[in-house]
Amino acid sequence: NIKEVGFDSSITIAMGIAIEFKLQYKLVELSNYLLKNYDEFFNNQSEINRYTFQMMSGFFYRYIKNDKRALRKFLGARANPYHWSREIISYEDIITDHTLIYEIFEIYLIKKNNEKARDYLDMYIEQYKNFEDFLKNNKSFVQFDKDMFIEIKRKSLDMKRRLLFSEF
Image (cartoon, rainbow, N blue to C red):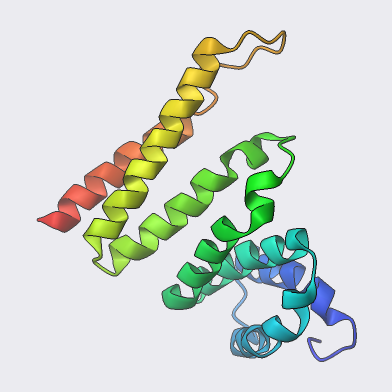
């Protein structure tokens, strides 16, 4: 029940469950709760809590097809200082920026804003090239799989194709 005291800290979990299990029940109520209580609770939280909320609410808004709000949340997550200063300890941490860039690209493509979609595609590809350079120049005792980021490359090719199709 979202009206229970203490639910604020569980909202990201509730959004994740709604998306993962494709729940439809009370989505409007959850969406309204997000709009009403975001400023009251998450603006006063730490950057990491705000960042997690921004990302998950962006995915939630994409799920309920409210791309305008999703875009705002994804851009906010990329602008959050925690996004740029977080400790990278997993593959998911490494590719988080690509995930955000991809979601932003998707929204701009849907809105037929091809110029901004192209900007985010270029950013996505540039960061992939940085990953490739990192793998080529890695002198660490930790060896990485050369195909570690192949999914990002595949997705970038699909993004190029879809943007070209959208432009014609």
